[in-house]
Amino acid sequence: SAVISQKPSRDICQRGTSLTIQCQVDSQVTMMFWYRQQPGQSLTLIATANQGSEATYESGFVIDKFPISRPNLTFSTLTVSNMSPEDSSIYLCSVATGRSNQPQHFGDGTRLSIL
Amino acid sequence: GQSLEQPSEVTAVEGAIVQINCTYQTSGFYGLSWYQQHDGGAPTFLSYNALDGLEETGRFSSFLSRSDSYGYLLLQELQMKDSASYFCAVRPRMDSSYKLIFGSGTRLLVRP
View 1 (cartoon, each protein chain N blue to C red):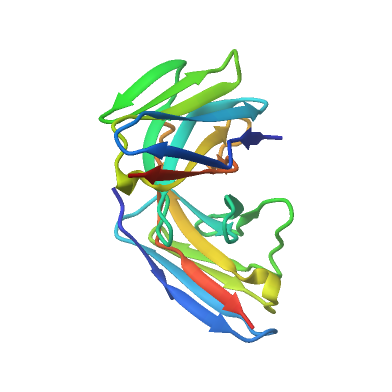
View 2 (spheres, each protein chain N blue to C red; view 1 turned 90 degrees about the horizontal axis):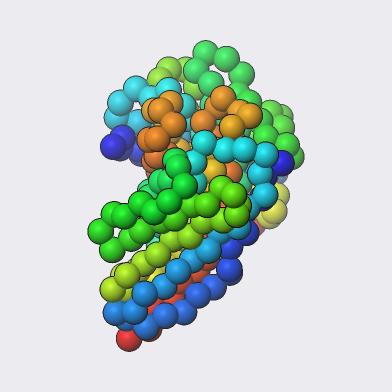
């Protein structure tokens, strides 16, 4: 299975600032996704990161707040912009091969706290 | 849309068997997956049911019944390390992106 590295692993940020989270995969993958997991809650999909084109956002998430880049098949970034305490959460990158019977694999996540 | 409901918490004794249910309302999906997540860790894949019936992987088994809109994860010979959160998830059929929609999650506590 793919090895996924997420950076930073955690951060504490000031209200109103922005933070970019990086996701690096050790092999080329078709699909990359970004999820949010609030404390004690389930995973909510933010967007699908598309290589070479704009990300596809889920309902409730917008590009201005969560800009995403995917310059190649092994790397993606998620920026959390103009942060507020409500953005305190775990942000997870995941990858998929594009085969329906193959599982998604997740990075260890970025634990973000906003003061 | 899709929604997947799970019990919020289950407690069981070490060595016992526990079943975690997942009931769903969805317009169609390719298969039902199960993921395990320890506190502070990443979700890890456990099992996948593409078709109705039982899939067995060691101590873990998963079952799907599309006619009943229901699935479950069965954990046998429970160990303390099985204490974790468990999520069912589906890939919507009407979407070509391979994204997953996750259930509400079940926190399993294994007691000695």
